[in-house]
Every structure is written in C-alpha cells, then in structure tokens.
Image (cartoon, rainbow, N blue to C red; front, top):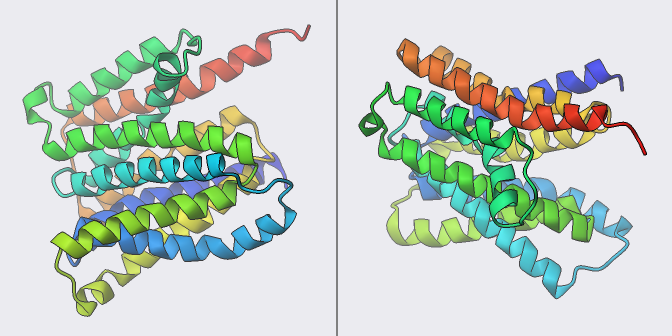
Length: 296
C-alpha cells in the first residue's frame, strides 16, 4: 500500500467516525441514551469477536489477572466517555460535540504530565490555551451560554483521554489490541444495559426505528473504522495520520450541517477552528521535533 492510499483509508475512517456523531444524535429520537450505548457496544463486541479468536491463536502470552484488570478499567473509562458524550448530545449540537470531543488529543499529554509524571513538550501549554479559547468562542464569548451538553462533552473528552492512556499501557503489556477492544466494548455494553433496564423504557419498535444508527455505529464506527486505522497507520507517518484522523471533527460538523441543518455564528466557527488547530499542533509539533533531533 502506498502512503497516499493509506492516508485515504485514514480519511475514510475519520469520515465514518464523523458520521457516527449524526447517527448518535438521531438515534435518540427512538431510544434513550443508555439503550443506544448498550445496543451499540453489544453489536461492536460481536463484530470484533471473530478477530479476537484469530488473534488469540497467535498470542505469545496468556492473559493474566493484571491484564484482565487493565481491560476492565479501560472498559469503565470507555463507558464513562460514551455516557457523557451520548447524554450530552441531548442538549448540545452535533457540531459542538464533534469538536469538543476532539479535545482528548490535548488532554492525553496533560494526563501524562499530571498523573504519569512525564516531562511535557512545550507545545502542550499553548495547545491547551488554544483549546480553552476555542471553547470560549464556541460559547459566543459568554461561558454561561455553554449548555449542560457542552460541559458533559468536555468531561467526555477527559474520559476519552483516560481511555486512550489506559489502552496504550494495556496493549503495550499484552500485545492484544483486539482482545482489549472486545473486552472494553463488552464492559461498556453490560454497564449500559444494567442502567437502561432500570431507568429507560424500551420497545422492539423503538429498537427497530433506531436500528440503522445502532448498526452503523456498532459495525462501522467501532469495527470497520478501527480496522482501517490499524491497517493504514502501518504505511504512513504518525504526523500525517494525526492530520487525517483529526478531520473526524470536520466531517462531524459538515455532516451535521448537511443532514441536520445545523448552523452557528461566526464566533462559533472561529472557536471550532482554534480547537482544531490545538488538536493538530499538540499531535504534530512533538513528532516534527523528534525527526529533527540527530541520531546519536
């Protein structure tokens, strides 16, 4: 595969994820947020299981009790991120959700600084300031204008960052990314099923009505896009991969405008642009700096 072909696959993955925001929003016309999460991740678990079996046959080490705990912790972080994002979509727009969620790119290195005690790259701090300024502009210059959904989505970005940090640690320890994916999907589905069964009404007709969105997000966003990312990143550079994957927010906003008719004032678009720039510089600048350092 050429680098151009790999980058096109990453662009396709980002477009699929961007479409997932629209599907998540429209599905809640038929089912509650917890039922959607439960069904979505149940489908995702089933979609990934065949690949897990294949991976297990080639695994060099067995899963230990410590590995199992890491799988579950990662799943709980994923559940927390999924809940805050999905519930947030009830009171925020798809455009806001897609850009604010993308701030996990900024939060990941911040978590490494404060919790893992890793020395930060200098770009983290201006990147974080740009992200905060972007959220401020998104509110129209009045933080009181931020909805509860916007604030929940900020929390979602933090949980995504925690999930990514845990996932990186877990995959490094186990060498089994597909087993981690299936387990975290299953943990999220079980937790959401428990809450949905207790607090949200459900009917077969409602599930049928939300079926296309559930299948799209479960199979394509959680299954196909993940596979495309894993394959494509073998044939391109990390910096180029970051650019194409970050376009998920742009696709989310574009599809929201096209399919849902969402609009925002000029300050809102300026805020989105600032957040997108923050995502890119935090990903790209450290990689460029590493390439410029001469080998010893």
